[in-house]
Every structure is written in C-alpha cells, then in structure tokens.
Length: 278
Ligand SMILES: Cc1cc2nc3c(=O)[nH]c(=O)nc-3n(C[C@H](O)[C@H](O)[C@H](O)COP(=O)(O)OP(=O)(O)OC[C@H]3O[C@@H](n4cnc5c(N)ncnc54)[C@H](O)[C@@H]3O)c2cc1C
Image (cartoon, rainbow, N blue to C red; front, side, top):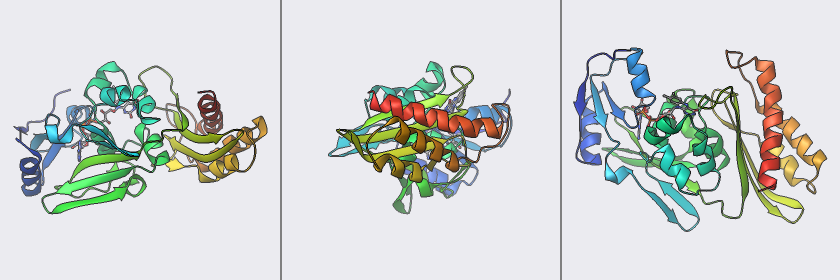
C-alpha cells in the first residue's frame, strides 16, 4: 500500500525530460500512473525519481493526416475512446473502468505491455507504428517488433515512446470483443477484428488476439480464410476455428488454458459477426 520514497521531477518540456532520463538510470517516466503506482505500492521496484510526462503538451495530441492517425503517448484512454478512431476507440472504451480510463494513457499501456492489455489486439491488427525518442534522436518501429515479450517493450534506458501511429481504417467494419469475468477486469480473451467488405466478399481482414500469448498476435491464416470465398456462416466458422491455432494461453485464476483457447474461437466469431453487422 505504501510506496517507497522517491523524488518527483516535473520537466518543462520533452527535451528536459529526456535529458533527465538519460542521466539517471533509476528514473522512471510517470504517465497515467495506473500501472506504475500500483507496482510502487507493492514495492515491486524502487526508482529514485519519477519524471512526470503526463502534462507535457508536446506529448498530448491526436492528429489525422491523410490516411494516418498520429497519437501522442500521454493521450488518455478516455480521449481515445471519444476520438472516433475506427477499432482503436472501441478498444479504449473497454479498458478497465471510467476512473482508470480518465488517467491511463496509450503510451503507458504499451510501455508497460501487460500480456492481457486491450490495445495490443487492435494495434497489432492495425499494423501500428511506434516512434521512440531519446536525446540521441528518434526511430520508428512496428508495434509487433516493439512488443518484444510480456512486460518487455523495445525501449532502452533514457528512451520515451513519443508517438503511436495507426492507419485510418475509414471504410472498414470493425469490432473489439473482450471476455471478462466482471466489468473493469483485464481480458480473459480479447479479439480485435477489422474487415474491408465489398458486396459479399471480404477484401482485407485483420484479426488481433490479446491475453492468450506473451504478446498480442495476428491470426494471419484465419484472416486468409476470410478472404478465400463469399461471406457465409461456414467461412466465419472456419476462420474462427483457425484463430485457435494462434493461442497458447496459460491456466490462471481467469480460466484454464483449454477454456481460453476455446473462447478464442467464440470471441473471434462474435467479433467477425459484430463487425459485419456494423
Ligand atoms: C484497476 C485497474 C484495472 C485495469 N484494467 C485494465 C484493462 O482492463 N485493460 C488494460 O489494457 N489495462 C488495464 N489497466 C492498466 C491501465 O490501462 C494503465 O493505465 C496502463 O497499463 C498504463 O498506462 P499509464 O499511463 O497509467 O502508465 P504508467 O502507470 O504511468 O506507466 C506504466 C509504465 O510505462 C512507463 N511509461 C509510461 N509512459 C511512457 C512513455 N511515453 N515512454 C516510455 N515509458 C513510459 C512507466 O515508466 C511505467 O514503467 C488497469 C489498471 C488498473 C489500475
């Protein structure tokens, strides 16, 4: 309940924040604090400094440029939910509860990289990109290579997630389906689906799974099945069945591995049907 002692740093701008992080190995950026503070309260680690980045205006924006949406890392789940970004806004709306959504940020969520977090299902399905900044410069990488392992983002000491970029899936039908025991819980299984439909055929299909692997995955063979013929109950059933091949869940208090794997099929089917009925 009681965090260990730390010093609190309020930089005026991103440059100052990066310089401080670069010169202090035991400093942690603080965004929404809704993963970091619970960990401090459990004394899982003891940083000497927390560097507050959540109020830096340079990191708080949502910009649509052509077919791309650029999102600053300290944009909250609530603001993303309200921004009408296909698939991503619906996913944000299902994170935790209203209080958490008011504080938690997209940059904090992907830097923390809980294997059951919601955004990764959508971000992997959207081929999102992550811009990373340090005092030495910046680099951009795909979300799939950024998410190296659970709780292990591709971030070096002194680096900040500076932007998340997703395509604007304007003409897509989409749905994020989350299986949870109670409203406000982390996902038992989460499936994000985006489909580009032309008449009775699907021209592009994106299926992202969360909570059933160490990091989110795309069920690419299931996507291919959806592209292989006219939309029918059989086609959807086959694709949803295939999605199970991409799940290697572990048994825990949220359910057995076997149950979770079966639920991947159920939730994929629900997500495809919900998207098509949009
Ligand atoms: C009760 C509760 C329920 C929750 N339920 C869900 C849920 O259902 N689904 C879900 O997805 N999440 C859930 N969460 C997690 C929530 O979404 C967090 O807000 C999120 O994981 C972390 O974002 P944050 O902005 O709060 O980050 P913080 O807690 O501030 O930071 C998390 C980590 O990321 C680092 N960090 C933060 N920003 C950056 C950056 N820009 N660059 C580099 N490193 C950075 C921090 O140093 C820290 O290590 C829940 C949290 C709580 C408390």
